[in-house]
Image (cartoon, rainbow, N blue to C red; front, side, top):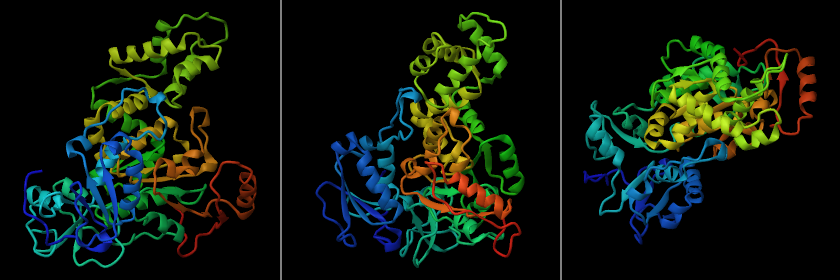
Length: 484
């Protein structure tokens, strides 16, 4: 960025904000950073950025001051990343680690590579949001209030602050929204309230049947938008099907926030590349009929095995050659898979599963498009997390981007789409997909009598891969225990 007014008046900022400082090679730690951990970013780190990115993520989430010694050009550190590898060839925890490293280097950092520290969010706020310089804080609002611009994870900051906060997310939108701290207004049980008011960073909410899952999701939406002042265009809630999405919309009709299915989101991503016509199974079968040579046997569906195989590749992310090798009824499938997708592309078509698969491809291949989509998913709320297939999980991780502010609700005991690759591991190993996550649990079943709940608990206890949980029955809600 070009030179701008130094921000030494706010340097190094309140301790509780945990602001870092980026320094030139060999530069000493500035005052206020004595004893702070020093992290070096050099060519070796850019070649394998994951370990250092993990360190910086942990310190960003916990707001610990860090000295970041930048030994590479910033242009090299922020060079766009992409891959042409097919989604099925990638791990479910695939990340663009250099993209994450660059974000975490600068998200909450002063720039001290020159003579004076600069806080670039203050500069941006003055240039694009109408703020003025301040002698005691980062900027002064048009109404005369001095404020600090927070670059940490968005949420409540522990400890007292001398000034109100505006978040860098607001500044990036050209706004100066002062962060709110109000509590939710609707009645919530203690376990529900703890989840709804989750502070910052990724969160896993285990929600057994009848525990008020939808109430928690909609209350969280209200809390973000109304109580905390998060901008609606930065928030997306994802439901597993249209009925669940409609129920959430009805409960939040006054919020004007994006609530959609995963396929709706994927289709919008695909539309950023080109408009395509969505087709149903009948048209899929017509295309397969052009591509597949198979004997017509009475009372047998020659195309059903190919439909299942297409889903296994595009949702479970299994290599087409492996799918063909595992089955004896899809001769030539590995070649058919590529030819089938080429027909879709040539004719401007998308079937149901191709919406997901193509959206993932675009996010992997197009860093410009990925950056645009990640703004929509700055704050993601995801329902029925246990039923995410590997493709869904990869899509969500790519949309969530480097900040990984994902609020995931689900129950590992209710996984029903294992045939498509869904697994309880997506919840039991949640920290693998979203490092630094906070875990919450809803414990009260408001739907069933005690005998039913106790029997279910005994039965589910035999599952080998599950999150340990407490579930108790409470048919009639009392004060502080409201399910829906």
